[in-house]
Length: 220
Image (cartoon, rainbow, N blue to C red; front, side, top):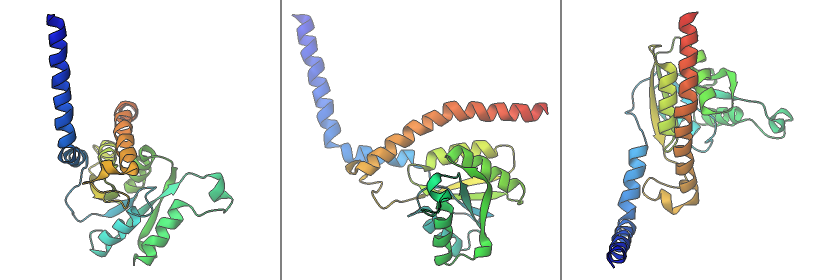
């Protein structure tokens, strides 16, 4: 029967593609990761921003860039209050980041803190924009995890569009996995899939919110 032969041909093609995909999975997945990650060239900036999270990587990279005289100041995020930090059971992310920076040679006077408390990347972009507007900042450098880099650059550049402030993002390698083997580690798979979903979510949710805010400002 013709339909049966066609079905066998289709199954054979699918099987062949699956075998080829499996055989060449390493270069394909490495290429996928490299296409996703954004990493701007190093350039002098007015401030290096350390976003919340990633205490084992982000403040360390910020301190390294500061040590190379790429910026005279580092800005850390004021985290939204949570019960454990309010009770003093554990230190806040801001306290940990500050300690890392100081131990890595950053002067206390060169460490700033956002006035707005934040709990996600979108809120961080607003807090940094508000801080920048009162501190005569024209160039911002953000050091963040490799898979987080694309979402960060998108939301921050959208947030600063029309302000005259340039935003650059540095993709910082993490300890648990590398670009060349991320799919072999649970943390890498989770991080990549989460960032893809969050990026899509941000494109739909926060793009609309930012456009509404701009429209309201124009009216006022």
